Length: 249
Image (cartoon, rainbow, N blue to C red; front, side, top):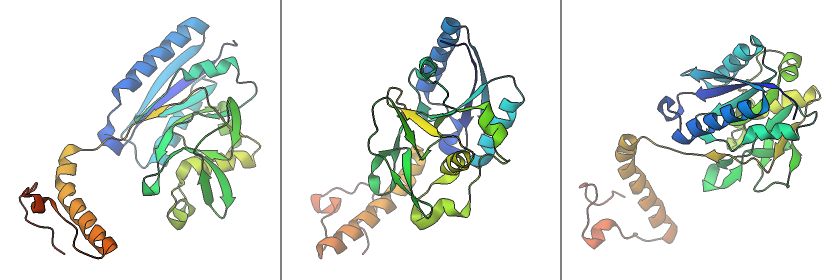
């Protein structure tokens, strides 16, 4: 395998109170092992507390371009990659690699952060992928590796959230926007089924304690309207979980 140099940027933004998932720490240690085994150069940068997310990604790119690294690997703090740097064994001349990870989409659907452009700033997210390498129109940047040549070919800012990011309630964001700008410059976005990543969703338990009673009330009201009659509650079973009495209609 050809030796290369990678800067891994760990983005610890406002989401999930700036924490790094413990398994991500282990993944970073595996990357260091890759460095030792291949003779490549691996450096880390931590983008801590920079918001919004497009500003954080642009900050990561600025630091990367000031270095001698050939590749920028961005990893969000809630994404845990597999042995992704082994992708260099078969990367060829690809310049953008989006490592696949699941995404909780609207309506509770679980899909991959990979999508096909359907026009008019609308996207169809993928529920599966081809084996091995496959080209995609756009992808999420939760675990995303880009060659230096791509950033040098694009105008700044590299990552931007535009008004179209919230078209028809479908959030696309700075990630899809970046892929489309890169494609316009001749760079394809690729993914590989052999390097899936975990994607964790976490919550503040204190916040959940505060929000749960109201959420249950809204669910009870919607269920009652759907069935056309009063839905049973926990109080009907003699249990008042929140000491608040029956949900109000």
